[in-house]
Length: 81
Image (cartoon, rainbow, N blue to C red):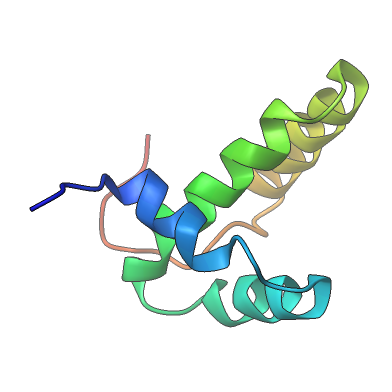
């Protein structure tokens, strides 16, 4: 039996999807069950690796702004840092 890692399983699942289907997958995953988070992480990793340094900086600035303006994800009970 072949063992496939989570990253590869997620890539395989979305590999042949259209732009519209990828958009639907992302939108359906955001704010839903935490089981979707690893998949979003893999997709973000792919976007990050293919982004220019200015795009990466823009993403980090956006994340930083969301974290510091109260627009971050709902509390998960993990505490604050």
